[in-house]
Amino acid sequence: MSVLKKVLDFILDLLILGLSAFLASLAFPSKYIEDGIPFLAFFYLIPVFYVIWRSKWSTVWLYGAFYGFLFYLFYNYWLETFHPLAILIAPILESVQYALLFMCLRLSKTLLKRHYSLLGSLLYLAYLYLTQQGFLAYPYGNIATALDPYTSLIQIVSVTGIWGLDLVVVLPQVIVSECLYEKEWKENKWDFLVSLLILSLTWIGGYFVKRKWEEKTPDRVMRIAAIQHSADTWKGGYSTYKENFENLKRLTMEAMEEKPDMVVWSETAFVPSVAWHSAYPNSVYTSKLCNDFVSFGSNLGVPLVTGNPEGVIKDKELAPILESGEWNWKTYNTVILFSEGGIKGTYRKQHLVPFTEYFPYEKELPWLYNLLLANDYKWWETGEEATVFEYDGVKFSTPICFEDTFGYLNAEFVSKGAQMLLNLSNDFWSMSVQAEKQHYQLAVFRAVENRVPLVRSTNSGMTCLVLPDGSTEGVLDTFVQAWGIYEVPIYSDNGPTFYTRHPDLVGKLYVVAAVAAVGVLIICNMSKVANEKRRKRQEEEERLSKLFVSMDEKVEC
Image (cartoon, rainbow, N blue to C red; front, side, top):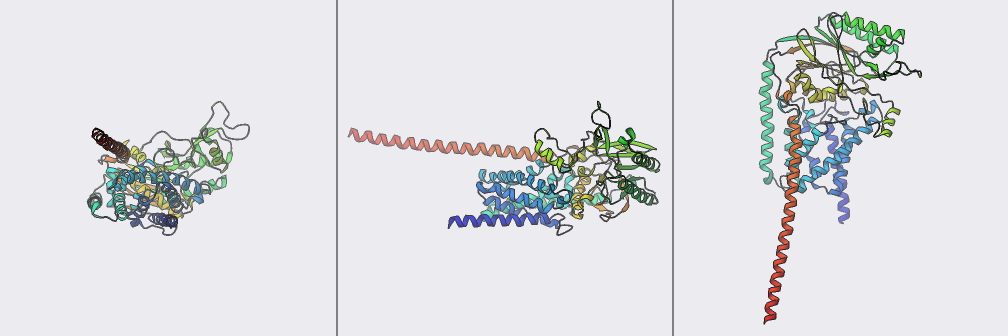
Protein backbone atom coordinates (compact mmCIF):
# COMPACT_ATOMS: atom_id res chain seq x y z
CA MET A 1 0.00 0.00 0.00
CA SER A 2 2.86 2.39 0.82
CA VAL A 3 4.44 1.75 -2.60
CA LEU A 4 1.13 2.46 -4.33
CA LYS A 5 0.75 5.67 -2.34
CA LYS A 6 4.24 6.78 -3.35
CA VAL A 7 3.46 6.14 -7.01
CA LEU A 8 0.16 8.01 -6.79
CA ASP A 9 1.82 10.95 -5.00
CA PHE A 10 4.51 11.03 -7.69
CA ILE A 11 1.90 11.10 -10.46
CA LEU A 12 -0.10 13.76 -8.60
CA ASP A 13 3.00 15.95 -8.21
CA LEU A 14 3.73 15.66 -11.94
CA LEU A 15 0.15 16.62 -12.76
CA ILE A 16 0.36 19.67 -10.47
CA LEU A 17 3.67 20.76 -12.02
CA GLY A 18 2.38 20.19 -15.56
CA LEU A 19 -0.70 22.30 -14.90
CA SER A 20 1.45 24.95 -13.18
CA ALA A 21 3.82 25.11 -16.16
CA PHE A 22 0.86 25.65 -18.48
CA LEU A 23 -0.67 28.34 -16.23
CA ALA A 24 2.74 30.03 -15.93
CA SER A 25 2.97 30.27 -19.73
CA LEU A 26 -0.52 31.82 -19.83
CA ALA A 27 0.68 34.71 -17.66
CA PHE A 28 2.65 35.83 -20.73
CA PRO A 29 1.45 36.27 -24.31
CA SER A 30 0.86 32.69 -25.37
CA LYS A 31 -0.32 30.46 -28.17
CA TYR A 32 -3.74 30.30 -26.53
CA ILE A 33 -4.20 33.85 -25.19
CA GLU A 34 -2.50 36.50 -27.31
CA ASP A 35 -2.00 39.11 -24.58
CA GLY A 36 -1.64 36.61 -21.74
CA ILE A 37 -3.21 36.86 -18.29
CA PRO A 38 -0.62 38.85 -16.32
CA PHE A 39 -2.61 38.51 -13.09
CA LEU A 40 -1.57 34.84 -12.99
CA ALA A 41 1.97 35.99 -12.15
CA PHE A 42 0.74 36.68 -8.61
CA PHE A 43 -0.25 33.01 -8.14
CA TYR A 44 1.40 30.53 -10.47
CA LEU A 45 4.43 29.81 -8.25
CA ILE A 46 2.34 28.66 -5.26
CA PRO A 47 1.69 25.08 -6.48
CA VAL A 48 5.27 24.81 -7.75
CA PHE A 49 6.79 25.54 -4.35
CA TYR A 50 4.15 23.38 -2.64
CA VAL A 51 5.38 20.38 -4.63
CA ILE A 52 9.00 21.24 -3.82
CA TRP A 53 8.26 21.32 -0.07
CA ARG A 54 6.56 17.91 -0.12
CA SER A 55 9.08 16.25 -2.43
CA LYS A 56 11.87 13.84 -1.52
CA TRP A 57 15.51 14.32 -2.44
CA SER A 58 15.27 11.34 -4.77
CA THR A 59 12.60 13.02 -6.94
CA VAL A 60 12.95 16.79 -6.51
CA TRP A 61 15.55 17.13 -9.29
CA LEU A 62 13.29 15.20 -11.66
CA TYR A 63 10.39 17.51 -10.79
CA GLY A 64 12.58 20.52 -11.64
CA ALA A 65 13.64 19.10 -14.99
CA PHE A 66 10.02 18.22 -15.82
CA TYR A 67 8.67 21.66 -14.89
CA GLY A 68 11.45 23.63 -16.63
CA PHE A 69 11.10 21.66 -19.85
CA LEU A 70 7.31 21.98 -20.00
CA PHE A 71 7.20 25.67 -19.09
CA TYR A 72 9.60 26.71 -21.85
CA LEU A 73 7.98 24.32 -24.30
CA PHE A 74 4.63 26.11 -23.71
CA TYR A 75 6.12 29.59 -23.34
CA ASN A 76 8.68 29.64 -26.17
CA TYR A 77 6.71 27.43 -28.56
CA TRP A 78 7.53 29.83 -31.41
CA LEU A 79 11.21 28.77 -31.36
CA GLU A 80 10.16 25.89 -33.59
CA THR A 81 9.63 28.42 -36.38
CA PHE A 82 13.22 29.58 -36.02
CA HIS A 83 14.63 26.06 -36.22
CA PRO A 84 13.42 22.59 -35.11
CA LEU A 85 16.62 22.27 -33.08
CA ALA A 86 15.93 25.49 -31.16
CA ILE A 87 12.66 24.25 -29.64
CA LEU A 88 14.66 21.38 -28.13
CA ILE A 89 17.78 23.26 -27.06
CA ALA A 90 16.02 25.94 -25.00
CA PRO A 91 13.70 23.63 -22.98
CA ILE A 92 16.48 21.07 -22.41
CA LEU A 93 18.89 23.72 -21.11
CA GLU A 94 16.15 25.16 -18.91
CA SER A 95 15.25 21.71 -17.59
CA VAL A 96 18.86 21.25 -16.40
CA GLN A 97 18.81 24.65 -14.70
CA TYR A 98 15.46 23.98 -13.05
CA ALA A 99 16.65 20.58 -11.81
CA LEU A 100 19.48 22.33 -9.97
CA LEU A 101 17.14 25.10 -8.81
CA PHE A 102 14.59 22.68 -7.30
CA MET A 103 17.38 20.92 -5.41
CA CYS A 104 18.61 24.23 -3.99
CA LEU A 105 15.07 25.20 -3.01
CA ARG A 106 14.53 21.84 -1.33
CA LEU A 107 17.73 22.47 0.63
CA SER A 108 16.13 25.51 2.27
CA LYS A 109 13.53 23.21 3.88
CA THR A 110 16.28 20.89 5.11
CA LEU A 111 18.24 23.74 6.68
CA LEU A 112 15.23 25.42 8.32
CA LYS A 113 12.30 23.77 10.06
CA ARG A 114 10.13 26.91 9.92
CA HIS A 115 10.14 30.06 7.77
CA TYR A 116 12.08 28.16 5.11
CA SER A 117 9.98 30.01 2.51
CA LEU A 118 12.08 33.13 3.19
CA LEU A 119 15.28 31.34 2.26
CA GLY A 120 13.50 29.65 -0.64
CA SER A 121 12.44 33.04 -1.99
CA LEU A 122 15.99 34.33 -1.72
CA LEU A 123 17.39 31.32 -3.56
CA TYR A 124 14.78 31.67 -6.33
CA LEU A 125 15.55 35.38 -6.74
CA ALA A 126 19.28 34.65 -6.92
CA TYR A 127 18.53 32.04 -9.60
CA LEU A 128 16.59 34.60 -11.68
CA TYR A 129 19.62 36.88 -11.66
CA LEU A 130 22.19 34.17 -12.38
CA THR A 131 20.26 32.88 -15.40
CA GLN A 132 20.87 36.23 -17.10
CA GLN A 133 24.65 35.98 -16.82
CA GLY A 134 27.24 34.50 -19.15
CA PHE A 135 26.89 32.62 -22.39
CA LEU A 136 23.51 31.08 -21.58
CA ALA A 137 21.95 34.36 -20.44
CA TYR A 138 18.26 34.19 -21.33
CA PRO A 139 15.88 36.79 -19.82
CA TYR A 140 12.72 35.21 -21.26
CA GLY A 141 10.47 33.70 -18.59
CA ASN A 142 11.36 36.05 -15.72
CA ILE A 143 8.11 36.28 -13.73
CA ALA A 144 8.25 40.07 -13.34
CA THR A 145 8.17 40.67 -17.09
CA ALA A 146 4.57 39.47 -17.20
CA LEU A 147 3.61 42.52 -15.11
CA ASP A 148 4.35 45.22 -17.69
CA PRO A 149 0.62 46.20 -17.98
CA TYR A 150 0.65 47.24 -14.30
CA THR A 151 2.58 50.44 -14.93
CA SER A 152 2.18 51.73 -11.36
CA LEU A 153 3.67 48.55 -9.91
CA ILE A 154 6.71 48.48 -12.19
CA GLN A 155 7.96 51.97 -11.23
CA ILE A 156 10.17 50.34 -8.59
CA VAL A 157 12.56 49.11 -11.29
CA SER A 158 14.12 52.58 -11.67
CA VAL A 159 15.72 51.84 -8.28
CA THR A 160 16.04 48.07 -8.06
CA GLY A 161 15.89 46.99 -11.65
CA ILE A 162 13.58 44.12 -12.48
CA TRP A 163 14.99 42.23 -9.47
CA GLY A 164 13.07 44.31 -6.93
CA LEU A 165 9.84 43.61 -8.77
CA ASP A 166 10.68 39.90 -8.69
CA LEU A 167 10.91 40.08 -4.89
CA VAL A 168 7.57 41.86 -4.60
CA VAL A 169 5.70 39.22 -6.59
CA VAL A 170 7.61 36.07 -5.55
CA LEU A 171 7.78 36.44 -1.75
CA PRO A 172 4.02 36.25 -0.94
CA GLN A 173 3.58 33.17 -3.13
CA VAL A 174 6.39 31.21 -1.52
CA ILE A 175 5.13 32.06 1.98
CA VAL A 176 1.61 30.89 1.05
CA SER A 177 3.06 27.62 -0.29
CA GLU A 178 4.71 26.94 3.08
CA CYS A 179 1.45 27.69 4.90
CA LEU A 180 -0.42 25.24 2.67
CA TYR A 181 2.18 22.53 3.15
CA GLU A 182 2.49 22.94 6.92
CA LYS A 183 -1.28 23.54 7.30
CA GLU A 184 -0.30 26.27 9.72
CA TRP A 185 -0.97 29.97 9.12
CA LYS A 186 -0.16 31.41 12.53
CA GLU A 187 3.52 30.52 12.27
CA ASN A 188 3.92 32.51 9.03
CA LYS A 189 1.27 35.16 9.60
CA TRP A 190 3.68 38.05 10.02
CA ASP A 191 5.86 36.94 7.11
CA PHE A 192 2.82 36.96 4.84
CA LEU A 193 1.48 40.30 6.12
CA VAL A 194 4.87 41.98 5.64
CA SER A 195 5.12 40.60 2.08
CA LEU A 196 1.66 41.98 1.28
CA LEU A 197 2.64 45.32 2.81
CA ILE A 198 5.71 45.46 0.56
CA LEU A 199 3.54 44.70 -2.47
CA SER A 200 0.95 47.32 -1.49
CA LEU A 201 3.48 50.07 -0.78
CA THR A 202 5.28 49.34 -4.04
CA TRP A 203 2.03 49.65 -5.99
CA ILE A 204 0.81 52.76 -4.16
CA GLY A 205 4.18 54.49 -4.31
CA GLY A 206 4.48 53.63 -7.99
CA TYR A 207 1.12 55.25 -8.65
CA PHE A 208 2.35 58.62 -7.39
CA VAL A 209 5.68 58.27 -9.20
CA LYS A 210 3.84 57.54 -12.44
CA ARG A 211 1.60 60.58 -11.91
CA LYS A 212 4.71 62.70 -11.50
CA TRP A 213 6.13 61.48 -14.80
CA GLU A 214 2.85 62.02 -16.60
CA GLU A 215 2.92 65.67 -15.51
CA LYS A 216 6.62 66.19 -16.29
CA THR A 217 7.33 68.56 -19.20
CA PRO A 218 10.13 67.51 -21.57
CA ASP A 219 12.83 69.96 -22.61
CA ARG A 220 12.17 69.16 -26.23
CA VAL A 221 10.40 66.64 -28.45
CA MET A 222 11.95 64.72 -31.34
CA ARG A 223 9.78 63.36 -34.13
CA ILE A 224 11.01 59.88 -34.96
CA ALA A 225 9.72 57.95 -37.98
CA ALA A 226 9.95 54.18 -37.46
CA ILE A 227 9.67 52.11 -40.63
CA GLN A 228 8.22 48.59 -40.47
CA HIS A 229 8.68 46.90 -43.85
CA SER A 230 7.49 43.41 -42.75
CA ALA A 231 9.95 41.17 -44.55
CA ASP A 232 12.11 38.22 -43.61
CA THR A 233 15.55 39.78 -43.99
CA TRP A 234 17.17 36.37 -43.46
CA LYS A 235 16.05 35.36 -46.93
CA GLY A 236 18.87 36.15 -49.33
CA GLY A 237 19.39 36.91 -52.98
CA TYR A 238 19.77 40.09 -54.97
CA SER A 239 16.10 40.30 -55.99
CA THR A 240 14.97 39.93 -52.35
CA TYR A 241 17.42 42.57 -51.15
CA LYS A 242 16.33 44.97 -53.86
CA GLU A 243 12.63 44.42 -53.18
CA ASN A 244 13.13 45.06 -49.46
CA PHE A 245 15.11 48.22 -50.22
CA GLU A 246 12.39 49.51 -52.54
CA ASN A 247 9.75 48.92 -49.87
CA LEU A 248 11.87 50.67 -47.26
CA LYS A 249 12.36 53.66 -49.55
CA ARG A 250 8.66 53.88 -50.37
CA LEU A 251 7.57 53.71 -46.74
CA THR A 252 10.25 56.20 -45.75
CA MET A 253 9.19 58.76 -48.33
CA GLU A 254 5.59 58.40 -47.15
CA ALA A 255 6.71 59.07 -43.58
CA MET A 256 8.84 62.04 -44.71
CA GLU A 257 5.61 63.87 -45.55
CA GLU A 258 5.14 64.19 -41.77
CA LYS A 259 8.49 66.01 -41.49
CA PRO A 260 10.25 63.77 -38.93
CA ASP A 261 13.53 64.76 -37.30
CA MET A 262 14.95 61.26 -37.81
CA VAL A 263 14.10 58.01 -39.61
CA VAL A 264 14.78 54.57 -38.11
CA TRP A 265 14.73 51.27 -39.95
CA SER A 266 15.02 47.83 -38.32
CA GLU A 267 17.81 45.37 -37.57
CA THR A 268 19.54 44.18 -40.79
CA ALA A 269 16.93 46.11 -42.79
CA PHE A 270 19.42 46.44 -45.66
CA VAL A 271 21.36 43.19 -45.90
CA PRO A 272 24.31 43.41 -48.36
CA SER A 273 27.24 44.64 -46.29
CA VAL A 274 28.08 48.18 -47.35
CA ALA A 275 31.49 47.99 -45.66
CA TRP A 276 32.43 44.78 -47.46
CA HIS A 277 31.08 45.50 -50.91
CA SER A 278 32.53 49.02 -50.90
CA ALA A 279 35.99 47.73 -50.00
CA TYR A 280 35.91 44.50 -52.03
CA PRO A 281 33.36 44.79 -54.86
CA ASN A 282 32.73 41.45 -56.54
CA SER A 283 29.27 41.85 -58.06
CA VAL A 284 28.17 44.73 -60.26
CA TYR A 285 24.55 44.40 -59.22
CA THR A 286 25.22 44.13 -55.48
CA SER A 287 27.73 46.99 -55.57
CA LYS A 288 25.20 49.20 -57.36
CA LEU A 289 22.53 48.30 -54.83
CA CYS A 290 24.89 49.24 -51.97
CA ASN A 291 25.75 52.52 -53.70
CA ASP A 292 22.05 53.31 -54.14
CA PHE A 293 21.48 52.58 -50.45
CA VAL A 294 24.34 54.83 -49.33
CA SER A 295 23.15 57.57 -51.67
CA PHE A 296 19.60 57.34 -50.32
CA GLY A 297 20.71 57.46 -46.70
CA SER A 298 23.18 60.28 -47.31
CA ASN A 299 20.69 62.50 -49.16
CA LEU A 300 17.51 61.86 -47.20
CA GLY A 301 17.66 65.26 -45.53
CA VAL A 302 17.34 63.87 -41.98
CA PRO A 303 19.43 61.25 -40.18
CA LEU A 304 18.72 57.62 -41.07
CA VAL A 305 19.45 54.92 -38.50
CA THR A 306 19.42 51.41 -39.93
CA GLY A 307 20.73 47.92 -39.41
CA ASN A 308 23.31 46.60 -41.87
CA PRO A 309 25.78 43.70 -41.51
CA GLU A 310 29.37 44.83 -41.39
CA GLY A 311 31.86 42.56 -43.12
CA VAL A 312 35.59 42.87 -42.47
CA ILE A 313 38.64 40.84 -43.47
CA LYS A 314 39.08 37.76 -41.27
CA ASP A 315 42.64 36.75 -42.19
CA LYS A 316 44.73 39.68 -43.42
CA GLU A 317 47.31 37.29 -44.86
CA LEU A 318 44.79 35.98 -47.39
CA ALA A 319 42.86 37.50 -50.28
CA PRO A 320 39.29 38.80 -49.69
CA ILE A 321 37.92 36.05 -51.92
CA LEU A 322 39.62 32.68 -51.55
CA GLU A 323 40.34 30.27 -54.37
CA SER A 324 37.42 28.13 -53.21
CA GLY A 325 35.12 31.08 -53.88
CA GLU A 326 34.40 31.63 -50.17
CA TRP A 327 34.78 35.09 -48.68
CA ASN A 328 37.60 35.65 -46.23
CA TRP A 329 35.47 37.67 -43.87
CA LYS A 330 33.87 37.96 -40.48
CA THR A 331 30.68 39.88 -39.85
CA TYR A 332 29.14 42.08 -37.17
CA ASN A 333 25.47 42.81 -36.59
CA THR A 334 25.74 46.56 -36.99
CA VAL A 335 23.76 49.79 -36.90
CA ILE A 336 24.70 52.60 -39.29
CA LEU A 337 23.93 56.27 -38.72
CA PHE A 338 23.61 58.33 -41.90
CA SER A 339 23.91 62.04 -41.17
CA GLU A 340 25.44 65.18 -42.67
CA GLY A 341 25.71 63.64 -46.12
CA GLY A 342 27.34 60.33 -45.24
CA ILE A 343 27.91 57.57 -42.72
CA LYS A 344 28.46 59.35 -39.40
CA GLY A 345 29.04 56.31 -37.20
CA THR A 346 28.33 52.65 -36.47
CA TYR A 347 27.48 50.42 -33.51
CA ARG A 348 28.27 46.71 -33.31
CA LYS A 349 25.98 44.41 -31.34
CA GLN A 350 27.60 43.44 -28.04
CA HIS A 351 25.28 40.82 -26.54
CA LEU A 352 24.62 38.08 -29.08
CA VAL A 353 21.99 35.36 -28.86
CA PRO A 354 23.59 32.10 -27.66
CA PHE A 355 23.75 29.26 -30.18
CA THR A 356 21.91 31.21 -32.90
CA GLU A 357 24.33 34.15 -33.17
CA TYR A 358 27.49 32.83 -31.56
CA PHE A 359 29.00 29.75 -29.93
CA PRO A 360 32.38 30.26 -28.21
CA TYR A 361 33.10 26.61 -27.37
CA GLU A 362 34.32 25.22 -30.68
CA LYS A 363 37.37 23.57 -29.08
CA GLU A 364 35.66 22.39 -25.90
CA LEU A 365 32.50 21.03 -27.58
CA PRO A 366 33.40 20.33 -31.22
CA TRP A 367 30.51 17.87 -31.67
CA LEU A 368 27.95 20.53 -30.73
CA TYR A 369 29.74 23.17 -32.78
CA ASN A 370 29.61 20.96 -35.88
CA LEU A 371 25.97 20.03 -35.19
CA LEU A 372 25.00 23.69 -35.11
CA LEU A 373 26.92 24.35 -38.32
CA ALA A 374 25.24 21.41 -39.99
CA ASN A 375 21.87 22.87 -39.05
CA ASP A 376 22.69 26.12 -40.88
CA TYR A 377 23.43 28.28 -37.85
CA LYS A 378 25.41 31.44 -38.65
CA TRP A 379 27.40 33.47 -36.14
CA TRP A 380 28.36 37.10 -35.69
CA GLU A 381 31.43 38.65 -34.13
CA THR A 382 30.94 40.43 -30.80
CA GLY A 383 31.05 44.21 -30.57
CA GLU A 384 32.98 45.77 -27.71
CA GLU A 385 31.81 49.38 -27.38
CA ALA A 386 28.57 50.87 -26.01
CA THR A 387 28.28 53.54 -28.70
CA VAL A 388 26.41 56.77 -28.04
CA PHE A 389 25.44 58.75 -31.16
CA GLU A 390 24.59 62.44 -31.19
CA TYR A 391 22.45 64.56 -33.50
CA ASP A 392 21.20 68.09 -33.00
CA GLY A 393 22.21 68.08 -29.36
CA VAL A 394 20.40 64.81 -28.56
CA LYS A 395 22.40 61.75 -27.56
CA PHE A 396 21.02 58.29 -28.27
CA SER A 397 22.05 54.64 -28.43
CA THR A 398 20.81 51.73 -30.51
CA PRO A 399 20.54 48.37 -28.71
CA ILE A 400 20.01 45.70 -31.36
CA CYS A 401 17.15 43.20 -30.99
CA PHE A 402 17.98 40.82 -28.08
CA GLU A 403 19.97 43.59 -26.37
CA ASP A 404 16.85 45.41 -25.19
CA THR A 405 16.14 42.46 -22.88
CA PHE A 406 19.19 43.16 -20.68
CA GLY A 407 19.07 45.92 -18.08
CA TYR A 408 22.81 46.30 -17.47
CA LEU A 409 23.61 46.91 -21.14
CA ASN A 410 21.04 49.66 -21.60
CA ALA A 411 22.10 51.22 -18.29
CA GLU A 412 25.61 51.47 -19.72
CA PHE A 413 24.30 53.35 -22.76
CA VAL A 414 22.43 55.81 -20.54
CA SER A 415 25.31 56.21 -18.08
CA LYS A 416 27.45 57.26 -21.05
CA GLY A 417 24.98 60.01 -21.90
CA ALA A 418 22.19 58.48 -24.03
CA GLN A 419 18.93 60.44 -23.59
CA MET A 420 16.97 58.13 -25.87
CA LEU A 421 17.14 54.45 -26.80
CA LEU A 422 16.34 53.28 -30.33
CA ASN A 423 15.92 49.53 -30.46
CA LEU A 424 16.22 47.95 -33.91
CA SER A 425 14.72 44.44 -33.98
CA ASN A 426 13.97 41.65 -36.42
CA ASP A 427 11.52 39.06 -35.09
CA PHE A 428 9.84 38.34 -38.43
CA TRP A 429 11.30 34.81 -38.48
CA SER A 430 9.10 33.82 -35.50
CA MET A 431 5.89 34.27 -37.52
CA SER A 432 4.24 34.73 -34.14
CA VAL A 433 2.50 37.78 -32.73
CA GLN A 434 3.03 36.33 -29.25
CA ALA A 435 6.79 36.13 -29.80
CA GLU A 436 6.78 39.79 -30.78
CA LYS A 437 4.83 40.68 -27.64
CA GLN A 438 7.05 38.62 -25.33
CA HIS A 439 10.07 40.50 -26.68
CA TYR A 440 8.28 43.83 -26.23
CA GLN A 441 7.44 42.96 -22.60
CA LEU A 442 11.10 42.69 -21.75
CA ALA A 443 11.96 45.95 -23.53
CA VAL A 444 9.43 48.02 -21.57
CA PHE A 445 11.52 47.78 -18.41
CA ARG A 446 14.58 49.37 -20.03
CA ALA A 447 12.69 52.68 -20.38
CA VAL A 448 11.52 52.67 -16.75
CA GLU A 449 14.85 51.50 -15.30
CA ASN A 450 16.70 54.42 -16.86
CA ARG A 451 13.84 56.95 -17.20
CA VAL A 452 14.50 57.52 -20.87
CA PRO A 453 12.16 57.01 -23.84
CA LEU A 454 12.57 53.89 -25.93
CA VAL A 455 11.53 53.68 -29.59
CA ARG A 456 11.25 50.14 -30.93
CA SER A 457 11.69 50.09 -34.71
CA THR A 458 11.06 46.55 -35.88
CA ASN A 459 10.54 44.90 -39.23
CA SER A 460 7.33 43.16 -38.12
CA GLY A 461 6.36 44.26 -34.55
CA MET A 462 6.08 45.51 -31.93
CA THR A 463 7.00 48.93 -33.33
CA CYS A 464 6.07 51.55 -30.73
CA LEU A 465 7.20 54.24 -28.29
CA VAL A 466 7.72 53.34 -24.63
CA LEU A 467 7.73 56.39 -22.36
CA PRO A 468 9.91 56.69 -19.22
CA ASP A 469 6.94 55.71 -17.02
CA GLY A 470 6.43 52.43 -18.91
CA SER A 471 3.32 53.45 -20.84
CA THR A 472 3.26 52.66 -24.56
CA GLU A 473 2.09 54.70 -27.52
CA GLY A 474 1.53 54.12 -31.23
CA VAL A 475 1.84 50.33 -31.48
CA LEU A 476 1.75 49.35 -35.15
CA ASP A 477 -0.09 46.24 -36.27
CA THR A 478 2.21 43.25 -36.51
CA PHE A 479 3.32 41.66 -39.79
CA VAL A 480 2.13 44.55 -41.97
CA GLN A 481 4.06 47.20 -43.89
CA ALA A 482 3.59 50.46 -42.03
CA TRP A 483 5.34 53.41 -40.46
CA GLY A 484 4.78 55.40 -37.30
CA ILE A 485 5.62 58.95 -36.24
CA TYR A 486 6.51 59.20 -32.56
CA GLU A 487 6.76 62.35 -30.47
CA VAL A 488 9.70 61.37 -28.29
CA PRO A 489 10.19 63.46 -25.11
CA ILE A 490 13.77 64.41 -24.29
CA TYR A 491 14.63 65.33 -20.70
CA SER A 492 17.96 67.16 -20.65
CA ASP A 493 18.00 67.73 -16.89
CA ASN A 494 17.00 64.17 -16.00
CA GLY A 495 19.82 62.74 -13.88
CA PRO A 496 20.71 59.05 -13.92
CA THR A 497 18.48 56.78 -11.86
CA PHE A 498 19.81 54.66 -9.01
CA TYR A 499 19.55 51.65 -11.31
CA THR A 500 21.51 53.42 -14.07
CA ARG A 501 24.28 54.21 -11.59
CA HIS A 502 24.22 50.75 -10.01
CA PRO A 503 22.85 48.29 -12.60
CA ASP A 504 21.78 44.90 -11.25
CA LEU A 505 23.04 45.72 -7.74
CA VAL A 506 19.96 44.14 -6.16
CA GLY A 507 20.37 40.97 -8.20
CA LYS A 508 23.99 40.68 -7.08
CA LEU A 509 22.95 41.22 -3.47
CA TYR A 510 20.50 38.33 -3.79
CA VAL A 511 23.34 36.02 -4.80
CA VAL A 512 25.65 37.20 -2.01
CA ALA A 513 22.87 36.97 0.59
CA ALA A 514 21.78 33.52 -0.61
CA VAL A 515 25.32 32.12 -0.52
CA ALA A 516 25.96 33.67 2.90
CA ALA A 517 22.65 32.43 4.33
CA VAL A 518 23.14 28.88 3.08
CA GLY A 519 26.75 28.87 4.31
CA VAL A 520 25.81 30.09 7.79
CA LEU A 521 22.91 27.65 8.07
CA ILE A 522 25.05 24.71 6.99
CA ILE A 523 27.67 25.63 9.59
CA CYS A 524 24.98 26.07 12.25
CA ASN A 525 23.38 22.75 11.37
CA MET A 526 26.75 20.99 11.42
CA SER A 527 27.45 22.59 14.78
CA LYS A 528 24.08 21.39 16.11
CA VAL A 529 24.79 17.87 14.89
CA ALA A 530 28.24 17.96 16.48
CA ASN A 531 26.82 19.30 19.74
CA GLU A 532 24.13 16.62 19.74
CA LYS A 533 26.74 13.92 19.22
CA ARG A 534 28.84 15.43 21.99
CA ARG A 535 25.84 15.53 24.33
CA LYS A 536 24.95 11.91 23.62
CA ARG A 537 28.58 10.88 24.13
CA GLN A 538 28.68 12.69 27.45
CA GLU A 539 25.43 11.08 28.54
CA GLU A 540 26.81 7.69 27.60
CA GLU A 541 30.03 8.37 29.49
CA GLU A 542 28.05 9.47 32.54
CA ARG A 543 25.85 6.37 32.32
CA LEU A 544 28.92 4.11 32.09
CA SER A 545 30.60 5.99 34.93
CA LYS A 546 27.58 5.47 37.18
CA LEU A 547 27.47 1.80 36.17
CA PHE A 548 31.12 1.29 37.12
CA VAL A 549 30.61 3.10 40.43
CA SER A 550 27.63 0.88 41.16
CA MET A 551 29.64 -2.24 40.33
CA ASP A 552 32.50 -1.11 42.57
CA GLU A 553 30.11 -0.56 45.44
CA LYS A 554 28.73 -4.08 45.03
CA VAL A 555 32.23 -5.56 44.97
CA GLU A 556 33.14 -3.76 48.18
CA CYS A 557 30.03 -5.12 49.82
